[in-house]
Image (cartoon, rainbow, N blue to C red; front, top):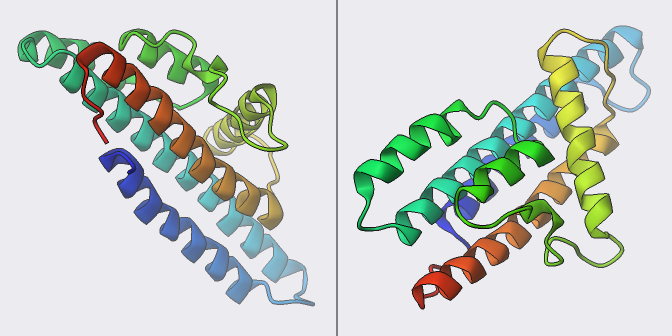
Length: 182
């Protein structure tokens, strides 16, 4: 069973599918250069949105883990969130690791559970780094081109990564509290 954060992520990922469909409507096969430029802008917007959707997922998963791990310390947890997840501006490897340190899961992105067939843990981290770099360059006005195929690939990647993060966090919460959260 997925976390509430993962359920929301899956719904938000449908928005990325809509962006991809919009790009295809603007840029059908054989489209000229003006249409291709418009299509590229839509893909860049989709890349930024995908990174934001993943960031929201990570923050919500982190905040829920704190609530479940420290139910008797609501004021302290609220203060911690104010200085951590509420100030998180990107979901790159460093930021994800940093947040989950506070939940007692150091180096979460290096967990052996954060991998899947033909996708080593290093490849997971490298791919998240590539998405984060693309998002940063696009969001801060840099020059960066993203293809439709890259966006589709990253979409699938984020969906799988969220499933793995859910498992690592649920295992940790269960080890600490004795109850599986989702």
